[in-house]
Amino acid sequence: KAVVAQFNADQLLTERPQVSALVRNSLTQRARDFNIELADVAITHLSYGSEFSRAVEQKQVAQQEAERSKYVVAKADQERRAAIIRAEGESEAAKLISEATATAGMGLIELRRIEASREIAATLARSPNVAYLPGGQNMLLAMNPSRP
Image (cartoon, rainbow, N blue to C red; front, side):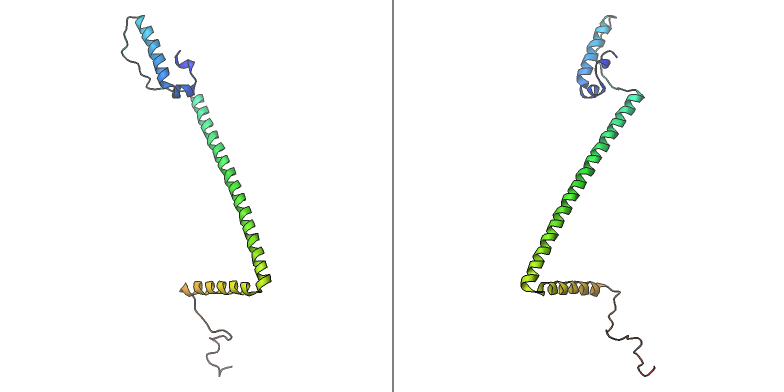
């Protein structure tokens, strides 16, 4: 107990060989006083009081919470930077489209409209639940034109 009391809990874990050597020397000297020869001494189990164990656990939980908070702050910072970069990109794209429209007319906007229509038509064509009806008149009501 006298040797172990010289170290704090962290040192007991990190400097275990040194603690073991000091315990061995102390026990060997004490045993010699009683004509006992010790062949080997091994520290097999260290236990701490419940208050100390609770404090160590609370410290670990606090460290994990601090790391989690750092991660949340870093993630929010990255998201903020990404939003700024995305907004700058969209602004630049709008500026380029505006300049292209001013120099080349409405052709670019018409091209984008056609591309969007083509994409919508392709999506609808792949869907099995879509039925195509002729436009301009209600097909079901026009089946018998002689009836008013």
